[in-house]
Length: 212
Image 1 (tube, one colour):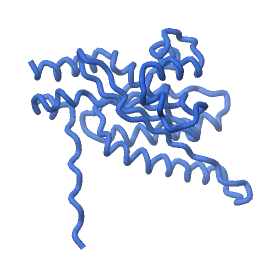
Image 2: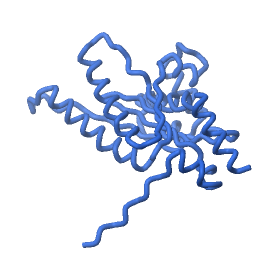
Image 3: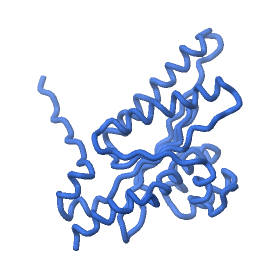
């Protein structure tokens, strides 16, 4: 049985800067992440300097607790759920092949148990999406995430979803329940913050100059 041809990984930023006009048209690939054990929101943004930002893809990874009747220990069940996150995130990391990865800052929650779960999910996704040479990663606090979505650092989740749905059809038409779109909205917002970062802007400018 012959093996199928392996898909060639997308070029890194350094490779794009020497690849000519085709790379310029592709733009910078930025992944925004809203990590959590129950819901992990992922957004793939494409940033073209002088053109704007496009939301190319959105994914929501949802994991659920095992039924109580199975009597599975919580820590063992948490690891099973992390494996589900890992499997999907690993596939997306390969197919999306980002240049930049941005995360919502892992919050310091009152419950140590909840903090542990969020931290484990956050670290799992971070490790998978940054496992290529040259990938740049950022972390942003919640007030900044709300600001870039709505202009208000104290905006509610509903306000964020509404504001971003008006700007991006991908979020408005995302095939997930309205109550769960907040995770996708957070992921988009984190990616948008990365587009403001001076390092990312300089890279985008460098790509745009190749077309001149």
